[in-house]
Length: 293
Image (tube, rainbow, N blue to C red; front, side, top):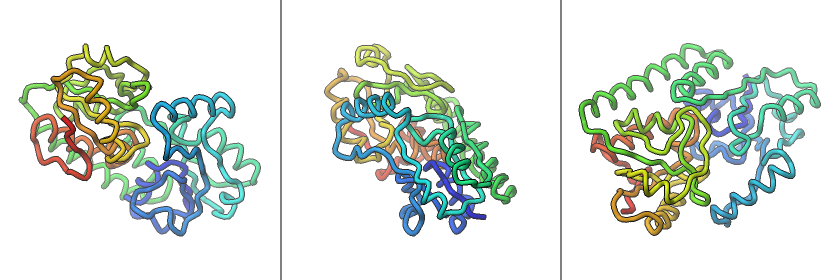
């Protein structure tokens, strides 16, 4: 089966299912497993933001969405070259990936009869369920169920490890300028790790907040997890957070794209790292998290 993934989390799922050899098309943001875009068609491109500050990125995103409706370009010629049988897309967030409606239009233009599967998880359980959805669509249903069982066992082990420990209040910052609180599955990651999420919207979109509200929330731990950034980017932004919040909470930076904001299998590693931050259950991995204060 020839598979095209139009979002990084789906690319991770495909590879975790042992289907990397079937993956013929990816996006410019697909970076895990390392080198996954090499030798494959990059069918979706987007904004160049590498040299911009978070505030500049926010302004560019808002301007581009107002002008174009989304941030991404789907290249018909590259998609045609892939000749896909299965296309994985999303409707969760037009800032995070190409909306599925644009995919449907492209498929019609190209006369492509591939199966299009839209992934739209809002909770941790729904994220895990997408693994089964992809596995079923790709004809490897049993592998999907095995993956889910393994991930669920790791979650259960964390819950056992933190059981009975005092709840610590954790705030996850999803964007710096303006500051965004956490939504969708992220508050559940905190809860699963034995924390109490503050200023959070479980299962709902993240929204802007203020630095005064963050300071008043009384978090014991602040995790800087900026969407679209790895650990080094999060560390740089966490340095700015130190200057904006009063002394008190621990401040940590985390590889957001890898382990917090993208709805893929590595979220379970994110839970394990949050449990290590909150309660010392397991060890923090310096390639994933770093304490800044």
